[in-house]
Image 1 (cartoon, protein in one colour):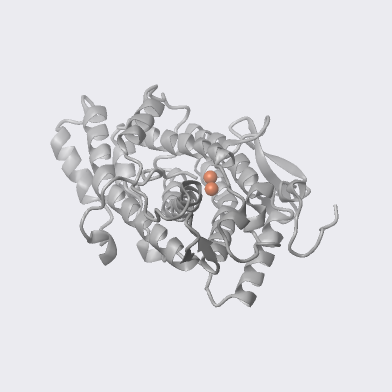
Image 2 (cartoon, helix red, strand yellow):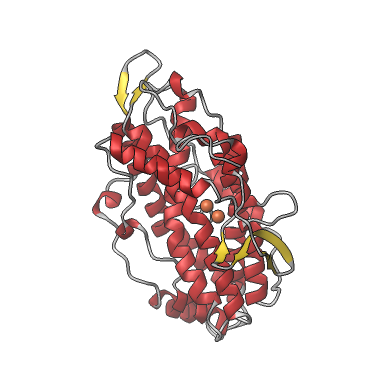
Length: 364
Ligand SMILES: [Fe+2]
Ligand SMILES: [Fe+2]
């Protein structure tokens, strides 16, 4: 299939796979991606990866706005740390870790909803042309490829199934509690939709931009999850299939790279342009994207610091009953192994009302 031009790609192209010698089979499930002579190749990257690179180059050549970057020091270390998770597994308190890995798999599966996000016509809210940009391809394959990568497609597993397989081979098919999906849904419905931040924009425009910013932040924050899971599930002291499980996590990690790259590209394209409000007034795209990004990061960092620790402690208190002599002493030992981390100054300010619709997600 020939490329239409250097910057325009068809839907089919953006979903095309590179030629593989062997498919990826994980825990007996055929998954996306596979292997050629160079090693693991992520799904749907034949044209998607060069397309994103070309849009990035074009953006940098035509705009002074740099590509959006979420600094590494904004990303909290994984909670629990590897040392904390090992303490649990070695003591036979496996349920909190089984829950956590299952939650990641479920939330990856929620990635399927990306394809349902309403996308208003670009010309209805962006002053300048978006022809031959990543933005012009969001509904032309980029969102669909992302949804398929996360949730699987047809009879091929995606990240949902790959995380389940990693859990099951590393922990030898553990019992999976049946209430995990319900608990995630309960936490989500308890979160209010955040108030409008850019109320002059049409509601679907703010929703689209806020969603993209939120998913970008989740994708970047997930880096600490990958480092954690690769180390933990790759540790023969606690993993029953260290090499296979950590390799599988590394494949998922490499599949995430096009997600981060297309989102930072398209949000940078917005930042370089002018947004049209409902009353015809204008907002600099850069201001809008920065405001949404700062709010998302604040909410995610606070969620990590406040809620996640409490969730894990309560999950340990339940699971450790009858497995350790003194549950409170065990929780204290667990707490002492947390990786210390100082949140950035901007996230320590006064609480914001509401919570991010996406906060608490760790998968995508
Ligand atoms: Fe992703
Ligand atoms: Fe993913």
